[in-house]
Image 1 (cartoon, one colour):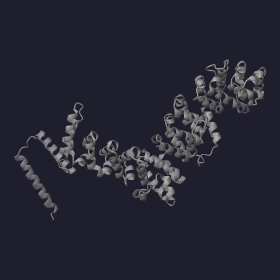
Image 2 (cartoon, rainbow, N blue to C red; image 1 turned 60 degrees about the horizontal axis):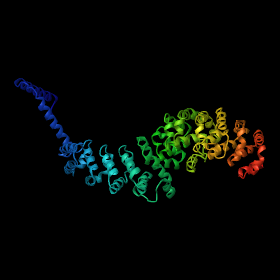
Image 3 (tube, rainbow, N blue to C red; image 1 turned 60 degrees about the vertical axis):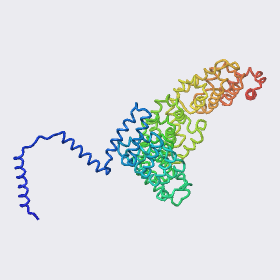
Length: 563
């Protein structure tokens, strides 16, 4: 072993020899062009050696030159076909070494798009590597193109290749796009259930069962394994949520099923993780159901955080096919109505005209005016909303909650009715809504609406007169509905429509007996049992009893009996 002194002596000797050489030979001027060329050549050699394919770089460069000619707009069809043949001959057998790079993958994608012959050759060469291709930042585009443009057999083979890897791929931001496209657009019911089952645990990942299509089926078939299945789903979903790749429809379905069947304790961690990230997922059917379940079962603080995350987007949500259901669920269960007024309703009322111009927006407004009214809502919608009944968080009386929300929207909705009353009162799409609004809402605007409707009814009536309210069935039905509610309004010391109507149209009311509908309007006034209304109707019709007796309308017969 050399001592330190020997090492220093040797080092000085080398330095001295070098100095002598420098003195003997003067330094030559460096040729920078040669130096750069040599450096570039060494870089290419290192790159080629590190990639493990000696001719990969050369093949890539040649392929890109041909591809550049193919993609030119002035390239004729005949030239394009010839160039594609050359390109395919060049890359065949080397596709796997080219497809993972950002530039050469475009060459492969062009061949996939050119025709079925090239697509088949490329797929046959790569079909054993679908999983690794799906994880690659650039190569996964090839898998996406096979799913979009490949034959049914190729699509099925891609989906089959995912078997046993679905959960792993869904945790990868790049690969999750491949799984999403396969599941959402190209998989059949059997393939979808196969992909979903992998989240239920290792046994379902290996042995797929055809009679299990959803979590409900799995829990019914294996009730003793419920705890284990839900635990596996929770573990898989939690890792997916943590990585931020939960915007896929398959994840929405799994989240919905898990939140429906798990206990309140198990729900809380998932709801906690999702509470500020629900906005991107409520545009899908299952995503909207997930948001509804989070609102129904989330603690009060979490509910507020969820709704605050929707700020400045409430109008957009109200106009969406599935998103509007989230708002209905919130209106249906949120106890803090003051918070709802400040955060949600105030934003919606600012764009009320836009809401009523859309089918889904109008549904939101109708729900605020007449919540869960079967006149406006299909039984299927009511059945979905009923799933939130009895949740452990909502404690306020339903009637009180609805009245407070109705009070909050009254001024805006009634002003909108006044502005459009002339047209809406003769439109079949709006007459029921006008009736429901006048029944549920309150405010000084009610008197204005009553007077406007009375003025409309005060036009002289002649049988067959076009445009008269008695000649329009839905308008007459609306007037009758408003009159029937006068009994309740009178008991609550509220304004009465019958009084306004008789005062305004006293001279024309006698002429209404010439119509069956008019007789029923007068009959409904008598049935309100309000003394001043009944006496006024009898006073108006007293001189016309003989004429009523001669009429053969059913309404005239019943009206005569009341007189």
